Image (cartoon, rainbow, N blue to C red; front, side, top):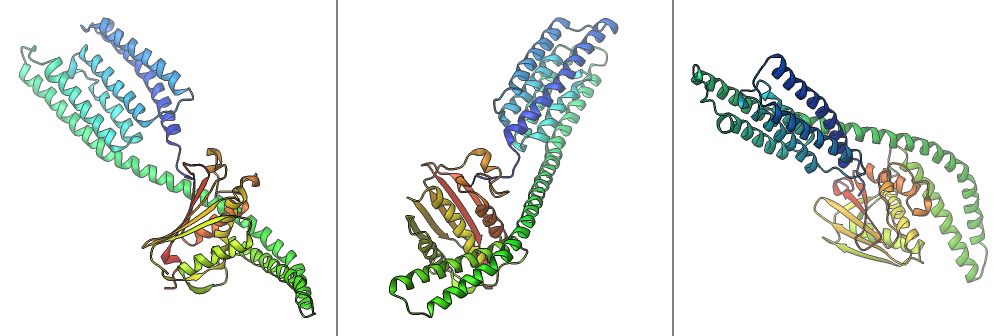
Length: 421
């Protein structure tokens, strides 16, 4: 289905690559800190174990590097596991370097902050609980404070206070940073949608210029053709000639309506107001008109919901937009087209299905945003203009490949935008 949202696997891949380089700085810093503390400050550390775990961390980061720069999709749970690995490595390093009394214990907050910015809240809260538990194990289980003789009680109180401060910090990060990150993501989404709408409007303005020029150039010859047909109708002809004149007259009328709808679809105001009509009658008449224009197509129709539905204004531009979508389905699947109308309390939904080839992923990213160059796919200028018209009525168009083959186009129209009131 078409979406304007940022591709999440790509987002997590970028975040993982940034995490890799953050780990590189951390590994270099950890190695330097251990060497400086043991050789310059002469602090008694279990350096062998520390170097082993730093080496394991470097090896994990190398494997992660290969993973992040491959073609595999990176899921958010995988990124969460990488942050868990960071917590585990930090815990093992703290275990062999004074435990909960280590002055670098606040580094626990880095993976937690990264999670708050990049992952859903549930992952961040889970990571916060695990981090607090690891810190608590370091303080009271792995490296208890009873080994200090002179100021043991005061020092234990100090470390306990550090742990409580960390708990408060972890909760604040998990709550406020998550909310701020969500706000930033919503703002980015709104900016992306505004940019997309601006590009659509720019294309519609260009098409509007072309439509106005085309309508002006074709208006005169179509008017002349209509006068000639009307003149011929006044003469006596046999039934066959009269039938052909009626066909020609209908085709001229269709051309004029198509030009009128094209001009309206790229303008700022809707086409001239249509006539009041019951919703079910509007859909039925629309489908009957389309059947008459495409007699070679086999179409299956159905209606679900209250009958005959509310009274609406039958806009010609909206009718033409729906016909364009039906034409797209018929062009790729003349042997089968289905249109299912579903009336709900707040909206009318039309499901248009076909047995065509469907759409490819790269096409789904631009359908409705710009016309496809390959009209053979049945998703050209007509669908682009239909998107614009339906959006003006507060509706939306979405496309997805049907599980049994073919394409399903969903048209959703809010009733308040169609009703007379």
